[in-house]
Image (cartoon, rainbow, N blue to C red; front, side):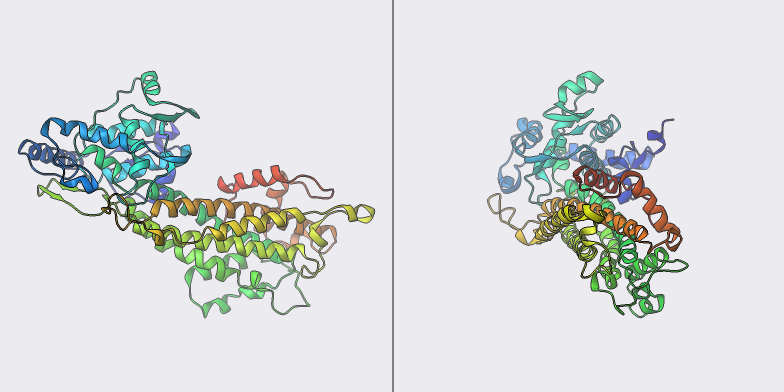
Length: 515
């Protein structure tokens, strides 16, 4: 059995987690629950729909038009063509495409929703999504064009199109016509049944998939920002008593207390250097547990919102095969994901702002307690022409400002559309995309901050103000790891490639953090 199969995620059984989706996004395989109860539940919904059609029952999106066209009756002889038209007229997405990881997450998230067994879709459709995941075939999905209710119609139309062999897919790092990839691999396109186009497209799976990926990146950033804060504290000869356990016992936010605990562990040393000139460090050090803690404390709540949405049936109508009812509602509305992503992007941007202020202290000789200006490692006659991290700090300021600019809540920009049928919409997908952009910018700030903190610690060593045994084992390990791939800056050099490499390491979560 391959490693990929050992890591198979089962859909239609237990509740899935954010980690289930990120595992699929990163290459795990998928399988469907093969229990009789799951198989029968799916079959009951399909059988009920088929009988309703024969009895000429009125079903939204099956025997009627879509959205504001719900009053338009579809002639029986055209019912089978309706889902194909739905997929095609929504093929108007623009902007950059989701990358492979994001598209795999979308496949997994939509499969999770449809596997709740109340969307009236067939086993054939569910298995076709599994086939795409396990063959690493990703629909090419443009990012832009969803207002987040009726769900992610336009981006999910690209998933639907891939299942039926239309449009393009990403396969082996190339964008290719779906029909060519299917022919090459012997995959048969499916034909969508009357409810299946709507079931595939009318839901929150793009915004939820992106939210799962954003959550895991944010969770890691909270820990990495804590580690960098520890390094900066040592570099500035800060006061570790700011993180005292008794101090934090009187303000009992558990996430904030966790950050303070991690800082205490990082700053354990036999003879920690202290700043004898300043009783209280500036806020970007002293209040770091409070800033990072706000993110840390939001994570359990955000997980609840995201995982509830993930494990929901979020199309319309819902098909209750057990009680033979068609339930019309608005579960496609992405308000919970919009709220989660608007909240998360604000918390993340505050991390960028915190690190930006810490680096500002490291750089400025008026505040850095004896470090050279701009963290230059040049000495003697070479010092006047060398500028160290001067331009990097400008970059940090730019990335931080852009991250902060993106924190305007997307959810407040609802716009009435589609003949005022969609007159209040969530903007959840835009919120998720904004959050990913804020994460990317903050990861850039974090990479630069990590390199600056590393340079600061090395400068203290060069100035004989810091011995390695004065660092805790965790900080020693971090310093050694960074130094393997980043050379101490004596003479000015371009740092773009270093920065890009360390952004990549952060996104790959290369360093083991706290347990």
